[in-house]
Image (tube, rainbow, N blue to C red; front, side, top):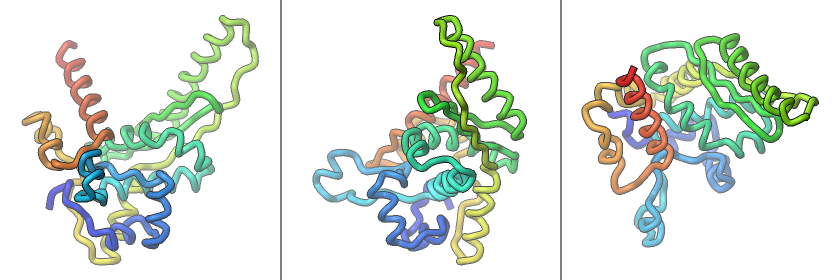
Length: 221
């Protein structure tokens, strides 16, 4: 079973712990944004009205639910939805390799930071350094009042574990790996585009660009 194999909506509902009505409401409000979507042309002709759900979507939504349970406001999450998706997707290789990954979301009401780390304290340190740098820049402009930062951190590996537990409870088959391996990606940068055609994925395209840039940066070192 491929990581990009579509999951039937009624099974997807069980993976995310929602009713069909709640899922439709989330989609209508833009709070469930599947990775694979129809092109504008397909939406216009009505042939590809429905998005495709894959297991990665279930992990992303479960992680977002965990952030909200930790105290993050839904409005703040909605504002950075695409950035959260790209960050989570970028960690799928390590999740598939059973590594501990913590997703951090922090903001001061105007600026935000989304990052991942192998431990909570590492995420906290990186967040503090990021906003301290902002404080230094503000001080240079004569602004001395430091912004108050809200910080939320959840274990992505537990989000994946929750989805797999739900799948087992409802006898739903999931792929062994939830994302293509680095070897598969290196074999052809257009692999994902070919796999999801004729649909598209702006989020996957952003993630592919990040993957290529990281590979090029590593080659230069």
